[in-house]
Length: 218
Image (cartoon, rainbow, N blue to C red; front, top):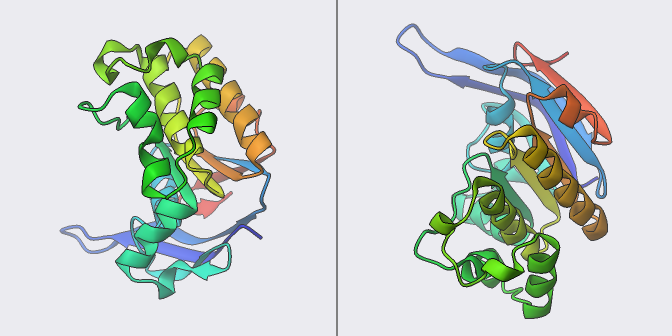
């Protein structure tokens, strides 16, 4: 199993004491499968995704990625896991404004030691970015910037791809096109794909679906 989440709990501090966000969440994701995580605002979707990415630690429970227990790892180990095995796509594109589109595309692959000009060129072509490689992020539309963010992740060949509302800043038509490209490329790579979305329509395009309500799987 590529990803295993077991009885994960998470609370955040407040002036009135701990506020539970996740209350014993469990699920699994196999390589080559896609999973949509839905739920109302405040249900814990993004918190769960950040825990799976190793950006934060759960209060209880276990998260295992390709046999590695995130709870048993130091910060450096979790950072290495993200660099080599986990790719993150956010609603905010998080591109590096001082780098060209081409250099943004290759950035994560270089960090992972997997720079491959042929793969980068193929991704650029399929994502419609080939004419824009010498441009900078500010010269692109929102849809084009999200394609760069997706290509940057896929260029590094991660085993697990996590996406937090990746089409949330895009209009419906552009969002559908971006998701189609992402799903096609994920399927070819054999990676696992976990996407947080508020859209039932987009969630329906993935293999499986989990719904969070009140910090629990509904």
